Length: 313
Ligand SMILES: Nc1nc2c(ncn2[C@@H]2O[C@H](COP(=O)(O)OP(=O)(O)OP(=O)(O)O)[C@@H](O)[C@H]2O)c(=O)[nH]1
Ligand SMILES: [Mg+2]
Image (cartoon, rainbow, N blue to C red; front, side, top):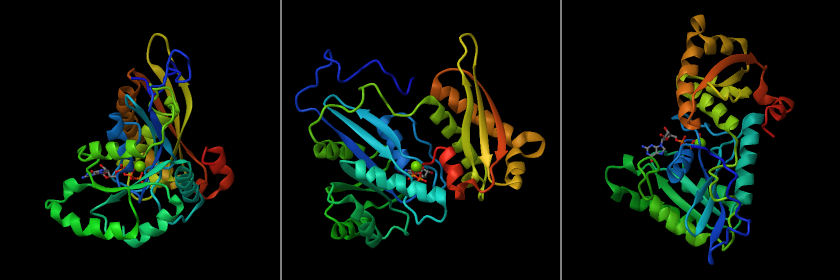
């Protein structure tokens, strides 16, 4: 399955827009690990955004486009909201602000099992929404055996902000998402679609390939390694007869991280490559030959010049 296609131009005269068509941007925001990327994937019924059990998985805004018969919702998956400690995190928070500024509607996700999320903090974070409609999702309700326990929480949140709706959901189990779509489409303005109606995202294949590799690094390594890694696609050669050739560079901050990533006799990196290749092939729908290399760029997360060169600007 292709993620982006260019065959269906919504502005072409042979594609008349049905009367009453609604379209708009919806920013999906919340604390790290709330389940924002899981929600996006579930709504699109296609995994475009990487998901791990670690916080700060998403670093850049990613568009996911949901096309209905009479609506187009352009979701913006965003990095989790945090107090930035270094330049990469400052970039991530600028991404969140940009998504909120671009959005017609906000979907704010809360992990009901995460007690760090206090209603009062939410109030501060929603100041940026400037009166735009906000839908609050209480996510991961599959982990709540007695749903009646949610009622006081719903009451608390109703008091902090005039939400359009507060909906208990499970992004992972696809529970409550029909109701979310119903409320969302009701909030969207009448507008022609923003993207061709067979687009799923704004990103190119290279981006997704790099993200899949990063996801595998997040799942295979602990401590600071996942956070110190950045993945670049150095070569992506499509072959007529045979497998595509992909060469990816994993950038780390220190020599010690490089040795951990490579592992004894290169075993650790090989494992990441194998697992990533499997997912890349499923994603692209074709076979690939994947080569991984590791490079050190000292303290790249803290250096604006490097961050800019690496696409975080
Ligand atoms: N049980 C359960 N787990 C969920 C649900 N939604 C997400 N998760 C899990 O929560 C973890 C974080 O999910 P993500 O979708 O990566 O969260 P995120 O908000 O995008 O995180 P960042 O990108 O780090 O801000 C993963 O382990 C998911 O499998 C849910 O509805 N139920
Ligand atoms: Mg995410």
